[in-house]
Length: 318
Image 1: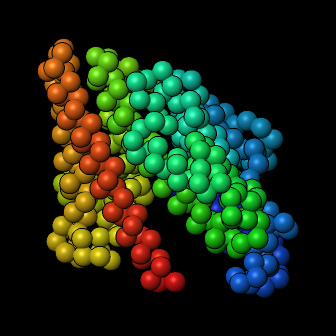
Image 2: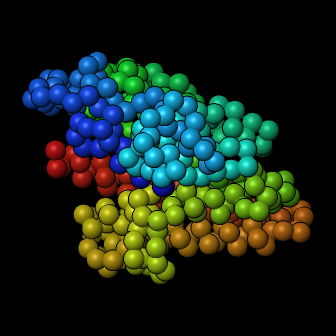
Image 3: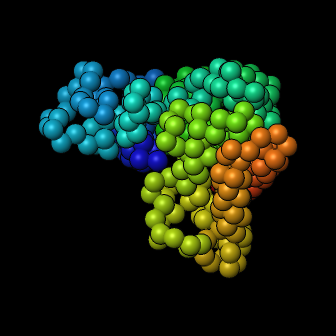
């Protein structure tokens, strides 16, 4: 979620150095899509491979005035952070949000249920295929097109306003890239459970189930209990934000989202099931794995509530 923060900051709200846009004086017209911040053909959107941070040093062609004090928010371009990552170093390289969906066709290919065949993700795959997008990499392709100002399916990002593209990027990253990956991490854990290999994910010190919780909540969720000090900026935060519009908070219009409380209980239920599955075999093992799988299905369904609320909210306010 630190990458997401820097992407959002890099997109900015006005022309200027922060997002590497060309300054101009022409009045913007949201209806025709021309003017400063709008025309994708003449006003450069933040993109390109400059000022990349690989966890150790800057790479690429970089014009940062003070590399020792490199600041992702002001120095990196939003496109760079999305494409290559900036804050989550792994032993094999930097984790990047773009990687969540770019390899969707082959991710977990050797597993009993690979990424693309998960029962929830496969529904998304079918939907976007019918819309003319790649059946598996639609999440990556949509965000990439929004950054580059190109056409994808029925949407021409080169002919819409900057605000449209900015919203498509921010929400596309969350809804079309991170959300399916939360589901995948749970599926990964269920696969490992059924195979009797509960630590067989990328990093054996972390269960895939724990990673699902991390991607749902983010690292900027602070506090304990049902009313944290800060909800962060990930799916957990979206649920807390939208419950106040629809009276679905734990206390009506107040407090945290009731759906987060339910999801948190299900995360704990699945976690306990895979922990207890360690060392079991046969039907006892499969029964514990079934609890984790059921928890995954319920979490995937409940996670749609804030998305639907957000859609209704925007339809109403616009």
